[in-house]
Image (cartoon, rainbow, N blue to C red; front, side, top):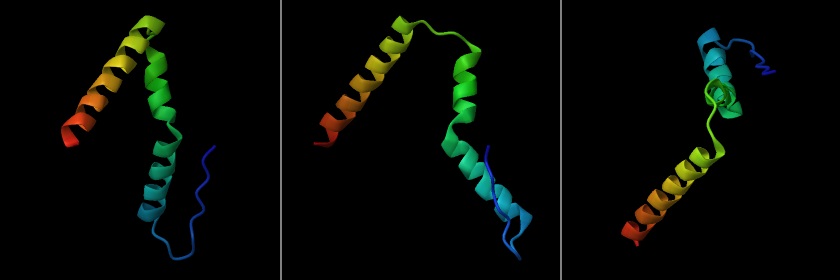
Length: 63
């Protein structure tokens, strides 16, 4: 559970912004979306491999 203490004199918009930041950091929404559709292990591994290859190619271009 996310708790955001509103300080004296702090606007509600500012507190809401802090809440949204904390919520995003927890990764709840990302996990929810990933659980909506089942993905086979082979597919997840293939995606991870593609991402790793892409990152490696980016690093080689910079050097």
